[in-house]
Image (tube, rainbow, N blue to C red; front, side, top):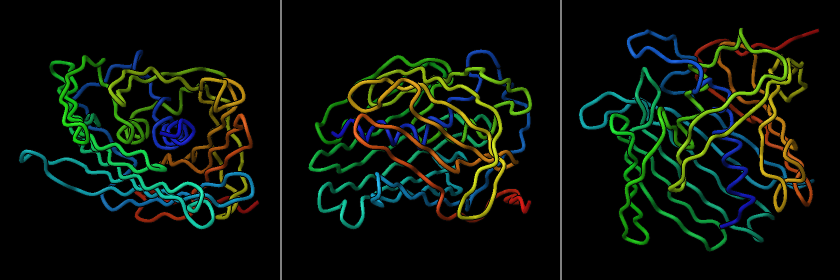
Length: 270
């Protein structure tokens, strides 16, 4: 598998979830939260590598049921396009089914093709026992792993952040972390708040919150703090741009299209 592609997928779709105060804030499961997303929400992101438009990724949310329990179902899809597809064919499918109120995952699916590398697995989360039951369909192997409290998968973390992080309490240069389980491993992913910034985008000027995900420097990224992330400073809390300096070249991910947001998309005109 391409380590670069794996790192970027994690950053784009779940590093956003790292701002949540998973270690220091306890949620009350009975507390009603006004969610910043709803069924029908859809995003398309465009990924640039240097001067090339390398690929697209989409994320859509729908209402569903799992074992007769109402859940939200998110589907993520990414592929390389144009000239990039000739050099590296990528086609990734992700699904997560998560609780409508607590925003914790129940069932996660990853079915990917990346330059000849394939993976097809399912993860069933048991949060009462803090266990993840992993079914590796490709290799016909089942394993069970211990997970941490409120562990998120790659996609559910995106929604967990948007529902629960205290945006009005963030302090400049304050770092946050979240528990995750991905590819049969537990992770603690950290990010730092860098303040607010007006960002010029294809939609116009948008007020954003800027964050710095901590990544491992070396083979993929130039430095530990070589990635920047901008999220709308509104009731939608959606990612507008991710920018990273790689060991070779740079990459930029921009929000290209969206629909069915839960709140107005605010654009500044001065």
